[in-house]
Length: 284
Image (tube, rainbow, N blue to C red):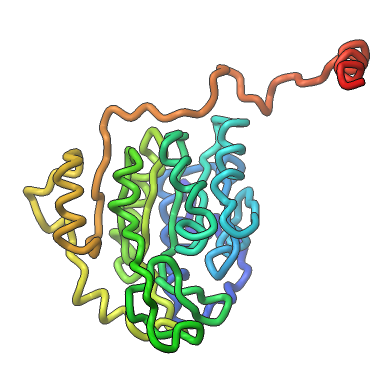
């Protein structure tokens, strides 16, 4: 049986003490351990920002991409080898600013992989300015009179784009987060997990205590049905998106990986010299 420590490369994270990202990293390692995913079959892909370091702390295959581009990289990896378990991660800037288009189209494609958004509602690595999820009035160095743009609502946007799996977690509720990530990885299709992960340095509004008072735990409602799309929309609207647990899952999702039975990575892709010359001559 795999142990949680097997998925740690013993590199000390450089996140600020108290950052919610520590818990997300640990939750992913615990989930991989409980699912007994072989390290050589697990791929962690990240982008830029504080969240981008996550792939560098995992003992697995990893790819540190550029800002907003973790999803196209992760999709390419899954399409080339369907036998891999692919988990992409990124901050709210990665997923809902520069990478927003990639997020929307990844949802539409429904490729069998998981995307974890490490949501702190601020740009931490660039020393604290607004993200697409910052509330109106949020004061930063770049918005001294308060943010004026309406925030994106991740849940509503994700479901309206055709998501087959959407869940939300809170970094302070690690056991719930572990279970959510396990369900996300097991889901056949694209699974998006939005994790409220407080930035203790640059966001003094959306703190651990603030979330504890605001969040509604869907698991405590025995009548909640995560397979009801309209009910999921209503819940996100009624809670202003401040809820945790499995929000929606389409049970008939098949997911996409690739069309061939043999992974692309294992196919013989060599061509003959004659075929190479023929292709080159076509460009003359």
